[in-house]
Amino acid sequence: MSYARNRLIIVIILFFALILSAVKEKKLQLPVKWTFQGKASMEKKDEKENIPELPKDLKIEIKYPPAVDEEAAIIYAASDKYIFKIDAITGSLKDYKMLDYAFKYNPLLSEKKLYVLLDENRVGCISAELKEPPLWNVEVEKAELNAILLTDEGLVASSSKGLLVAISNEGNLLWRVELEGGIKFQPSYGGEEPHIYCTDNESNLYKISESDGKVIWKAKLPAQATGKPVPFRERIYFGIEGGHFIAVDSDDGEVDWSFHTVNNNVAPAVGFDGMICFGSLNNQLYCRNHRSGSLDVRMRSSKRFYKAPVIAGRLLFAAPFGDEFLIIDIEEERAVGKTDYKKKITAPLRACDSAKVIIVVTDEGKLEALDYGGILKMISEEYAEEEEKQAETEENESGEEGLGSKSEPAVKEDKAEDKDSVIAEQWTLLKLLLVFTVILR
Image (cartoon, rainbow, N blue to C red; front, side):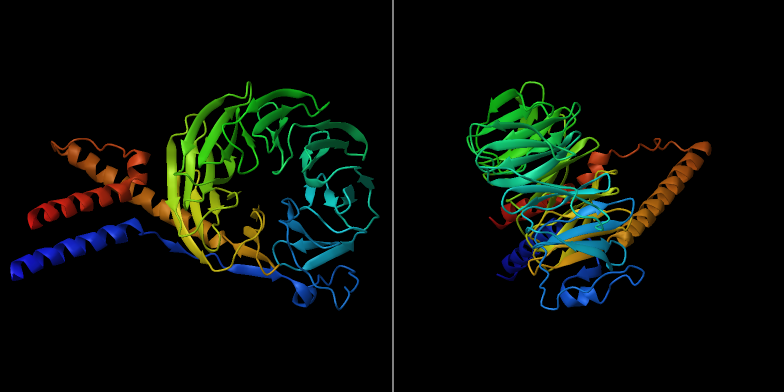
């Protein structure tokens, strides 16, 4: 009886060891550098700037992701009719401006100009200095505008009624086109030969010329899109209902490859170098080869992903619906670890590399800057230590060969082996668990 009980204890220990190995990830620090909201933020005004006092009863509630000026380390955040110019390093208020209409979408920045979508179907442009009156303001009639995007020739506004409207940098109407179905997600602009890509609620994907609005091709999708299309290199990437992530050829609209995430919808993607990265409602974060779809890196969260990851230097940050950030080194193609963050994030992430911060919008309407400089320093030190150990190992082995050792020359480990080391450890423990289970029988 005692012998059987001991065997059972061994199996239980192995089982929990397997579970622990599956969740074994490094916890990192992503401290809050500054917070912007309400009267407390007004106390952090830049004294060098002549900034007028805000109304005492004004409630600042940030809803949209800010625009980022990397060169100047400045971000622009919108709340109701106000737009705020904030120092990305210190969080101090440098200036603000009140417009005639409330914001309906996040501001976009290009060449020191801010492009905005406002209530009552108005699209406008203001100087990033916030000192001058609006440069122009255009009302788009008979439309329910829900998003804007920048192109080389100006901007394009989309409508839930299936309307696309192009406006020049000077505020002149360029073209107007109606699609078969309504537009739910922001269209995108880019690719090797930049074009506009848009999905509608009739499960269509469109490739559209930015110069005249001509539909170059329309492709029927297997299901409706679950996020905006992301043009990257020679393909367009996005998720569709049913848990599929697809890569569509930008030349003809044919699906090149697809990946199934176990009947869970997929969040918007981001592309970098040779990888396309996205999260899913099955709590997984994936980085896959953009050409073949083969898996490069995968991490698991305790929560679902709804927003696209953001790239900050060599790091990719992904935030599921509260609790934590997942971090991947996209240059080395390996998981870095996780960091706790107990607030719910309600808008897409932004990064300002010049300030070394990730900008998040919380469910409290706050804008927070999270300092990732410490993580960059930590991984640089770890990599330097690894390289030093590898060099010592190679030197010792070469020394042994010089003394006539019969040992085999060192073989450089493949990156895939390094990435799958945890999986290999889990598999070993699983085999041991199976062996002891057979013994019990």
